[in-house]
Length: 368
Image (cartoon, rainbow, N blue to C red; front, side, top):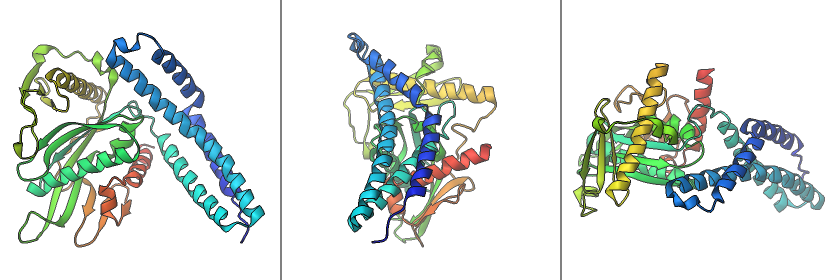
């Protein structure tokens, strides 16, 4: 067996890791964990359930981030030992294991390095994703449903908590729209590059002639901002509609009017919620998202940057940012970064990291 020599690679990884630790701010992260741990240990913490959930969630997120950083340090040390043992014993299996671990560490550091580019005002917040079917009829509704599953699978693969806040089902198949929350550190900064118009090209399963069909869906991503409660929304500015939650084909899910739709009259913003069982819970969740949207709108107006966070997404020809082609060939391509893969099935199953990382780097270079 040829002797392994990963000294240059390991040195490069240690250098990159040192830069990442500096940017992330391990000392600051440790201080935040200590402060949150003290709050989480308060005997009256659960007197306010909502506050308790925020504290424990924030603590869990930061502990996970610190554990990931600490594990890399340990893995780099262990990798050097693995290489040494493989060379001493001329063990081909140990050498293969060392190579696999090297690639794995490189991938993990690459993901963390991309995270250091997420330094926008709201990048570290949870994300609210809204998916809307665009041009393309039934195929567009089905495509929107495919994108909904794709983002939920992406969150699941990363162990990020996610939940569907609202779904409006289409008559024949798929969905008209859906809103989901992904509660993870840097979820907004990470997923904000997914905002835009997505295009699907395939042989339509809804066309008896089997013709190729092009359809569109719009993806909007906004941060969920806890401080959005500072935005005061007078009751006179809101129209509240209540209705029964429904499933595919209009089948009733609830026998009570628990779903809530809030319309902000001055701006025309509409937020619907039907995930929770009670009308009170759905109204509170809808108000939280509405306040986040209003805060973003306010910041956009102040900065005169109408499209920076959510954008004006029309979901039609001419402005698509990514194409998913299933016929006559197999390819998913991001039209901004030129990143592409030839396995759409994996992408629709949540394999989005390559597109997301390329998008974050593209956005950074575009701003520089």
